[in-house]
Amino acid sequence: MKTKLLVMLCAAFGALQINAQCSRSGNFVQSDPSYNISGTASVTFQTNGSKDIVFDANFMTVQGVDLRVYLSKEDDILAVGADAIEVTTSPLLGDNGMTSPVLSPITGMKTFAINQTMYPNVNLSTYDYIVIQCIGINERWGYVNMAAASGPDCNLLSVAEKSLKESVAVYPNPANDYFEITNNSQNEISVNIYDILGNKVITSETSRLKKQSFSLANLNSGVYLVELKSDNQKLVKKLIKR
Image (cartoon, rainbow, N blue to C red; front, side, top):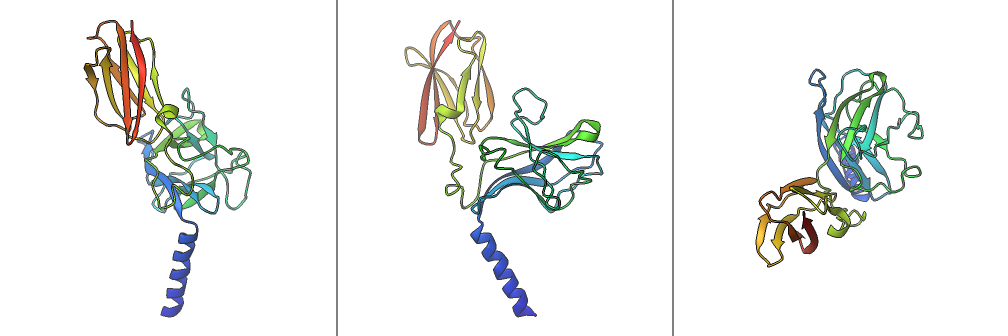
């Protein structure tokens, strides 16, 4: 019996090694405190080609009518810029990801495959949130804000961070009393702002925040240089204050 159990454990471990992973995960945040919903979930890529949303064994929702799972760029699928996609599938029914089954509730470990035919451009940096929506009452139950990608095969699965030029934007430009920097990568960035004489006038701590706001109220009108740094990357953008 012990030998059989050991063989089974080794086989399971071997399978994990063959389909090693890169994931982004996080804890569920309730939108309505009256619901008792908790647990962790992730977007997981495997070397066998699968791309899944995985709800862990500790996950639990209350009873609901037609719960659906989305990937979204915002924590609300109805928010401007969310660009949410429905990825709910049923492992038993094997639907195509568009017609969702009734899920009541999502409890325990469940895996929902991301339809790669319909959504071929999904990678680990495309979306930051897993959102559960109760379609029956048109209410968001909550979301998972996913952390940075981690796992032994992240480089192998081609989920390297985007370059600063691709992932960082400065707006509005020209600006009046403030401007914002959006960071759509998982990179930590630091920000320094210089006047045309090379004097540093604004600096910030290194941050992974998707959006940072900077006040220009105490600066004169003119041209400034915004220096962005991340690891071995540096990007300088010109900013005009009116």
